[in-house]
Length: 291
Image (tube, rainbow, N blue to C red; front, side):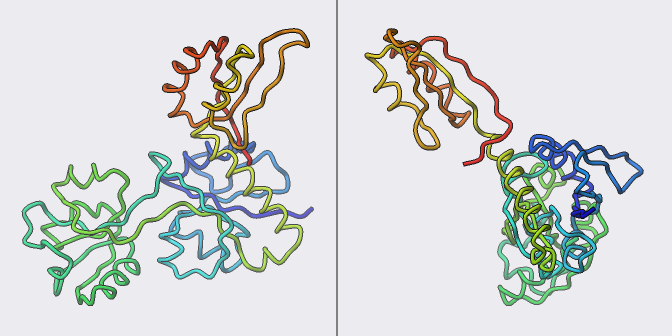
């Protein structure tokens, strides 16, 4: 039986990825001691791999497809095919940033001040590319972790990843400059994408994951409205194309209206819909939205 080998990120992105896969329709179970989680699709075999390594294994063909950050694809210089951008991270639906950070009281005030300094980072390639863009020569050393605590006793600056900046501030650091933004990507081995079966399976996976991710920020709004206010109600409602409208019965002057809307808009929409005479307003969560 043909199988697609899928690499899932082990570590900080693991929980968010497994949750997203569940909303996409895949049940994954992984133990703390196993790198081979189970999945309820016999055509997929999963492997838990550190995000830093996934793009290398996808490039060499040990994995057909993988989920990892653009930063690690860049860092590894991996020759892979990007299937989809998946904007989610450990703490939210947004990109992460690699930044140059220095101690609050450091005399380093601009990128040029890094000249001749010592910098620690887990992403040596990303840091060196940044320095080269700015024409700066500095000593870049690989950090095995706990990078924030090495500054200022061991190094002058760090290049580290952040979502909110809270960890940097907690360690007495300030952001000097942004190095690169990164989002999660679904990447595939180029040979796998030339295989018709694997290409179709990867495309199916991409559609379902993207549909689940789109649904994260949307809800289904259902309501009833009198015919006299129908045009005003539908004009108020955003939708993928247009709201779905159905008469409640052949002789009833009321209509049922449904629309997929951004969740953040609902708190403003419901009072305005109620003021237009809408009744029976229901907000429902969604698992997938596929345009």
